[in-house]
Every structure is written in structure tokens, then in C-alpha cells.
Image (cartoon, rainbow, N blue to C red; front, side, top):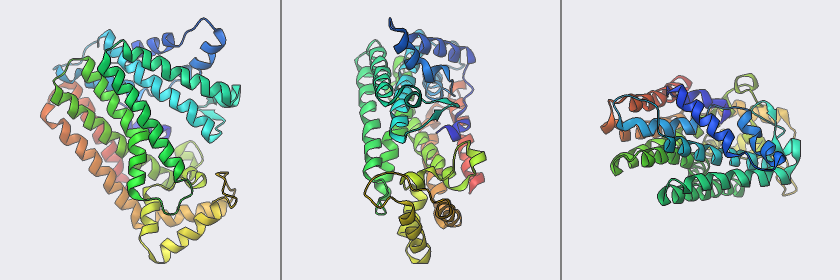
Length: 341
């Protein structure tokens, strides 16, 4: 996600994001200095705060001009960001990551057990804050946490599977990425008291944006260099996470599909584990094959379709400053998809 975060820069009021940042830091202060340090680690490392930006901006779509948002919307923004951060703590344990946002990862610094418990703590704080905003928000956030888990488990179930289907892939990214972006918009809209039809439209926009965002992120792992990504390219192939261009290339049949299958077999562990295989030549050959395949273009078309779905959902609410900001974010992503195609 970090590699494509510039796609999601929204022109929301910076003062509101400062308020969110302050509230984020305050939300994890405890009587135990050690827990406070561990729980604050990634908050202090910074980030684009994409989900809070969606939450705040969605809340303002009912106003002609964006102004200072309410304290309740700030809390909603904090709750969705805490869910995101908690999931990152857990992701880093699963990936055995050593860094996150240019700093040492929590698991690398304090160990897996402390990282898992700190991630759980962030999710608990998110739930506590959501409960203060009403039963609908509390239930929504709880359901979204469940969807995040479902999406991640679905992905793990298909690790190194040459038979992973497109439907399984889309279900996974819907859970692990799109659901929280949709929820970010929905929480802001609910707390702001917007009409139900507008709440649903904003939810559709956030989810559709999230689907497109993840597809583009997955494509960049195939098409970009280490320098462009700011991290090792081809990570998904090494980890056995076969994304849309891989799935479509394998399904196409013929020599290209057979060659890709052979390369992926070389990159997969032979003992049934999910340990990674160090084979840079096969990795680069697989990436080169995928870059030249028709599946890259068709995957970009799928991302474009999701972006346009979100734009259609927003269309009835066009004209406000906040709606224009969301439309600009979609256009930015759509422009990236077009240029890559």
C-alpha cells in the first residue's frame, strides 16, 4: 500500500488532519509507559492518513464548503486509522518484516508476541472509540475487522497456489483493503448525519476506490523497479501471492502460461512450507514475462472499471467542495491507470 499512497492524497483541511493526529497519539496513552511506546510506534512513524482523510472528507460532502469537522468525525477518523495500524502490526509479524515506514518494525524491535498483543490493543481501542459514536458505527467497525481477517486468511489459503481463481483474488482484496476504505467513508457519513442514500453512495465510492487501489498496487509490484517502489519489487511473487496479472496469464493457456507456471514452481518452496525461495533470476524472468503479457492491460482495465463505479456513485452529490475532493482522488488514480496502460 505504501508504494501507491501518493495516489490517495486528498485536499482535506490540514487542520482537521492535525486534530486527527493529536487524537491518534492520545488514544494509545496508557498507565504503562512500555505499552504506550509500543502502541505509539507506527503512529509516530507518520503516514499519509488516507483512511482518516476519506472519513473527514466524506463527512463534509453534505456541505457546500469544507470547514472544521466535528469532534465526533475526528474520533471516527481515529477509529478507522487504528484498525489500519493494528492490521499493519499483524501483517509485519506474518511477513517477518524488519521495517515499516522507514523505521524498525514492531516485531523486529520487540518480538512477535509483543507485536501481536500491541496490534490487538490498537484494534480494541478502535472498537472502544467506535462504541462511543453509537451502535451502528460500533457494529460496522467490528464487521470490518472481521472482513480484514477474512480477506487475509483467504490470501494465505491460496499462497503459492497456481489454481487461485480471479474470484478468490477479488474476494481477498475486497476484505483486506477495500472494506476499510468503504468503512472510512461510511463512518464519516454516518457520524455527520447524512441521508441514507448518500451514506450508501459514499460507501460504494470508498470500496470501489479500494478495489482499484489494490489492483494498481499489485500491478506496480510486477511493473515497477525497486527504486520506484521504495521496496523490493516482485515481493508478491516471492511470497506466493498470485495477483490478477498472474492469474489471468496462467488462465490464458499457451506457451506464455506454461513458461510462467514453470518459473513460479521454481520460486515456490518444495517442502510444503511458505518459506521464500531466493532465486532472483527466476523472479526477474517471471516479472519480465508478466510485463509483456496482455494481462497487465486487462488488469488495468479492471481497475479503471472500479474507479468509474465509484465515480458514478458520487455523481448525484456533485458540486460540493468535499465531493470534488473525492472525485479528484479518483481522477488521480484513474490517471495513473491510464498512463500505465
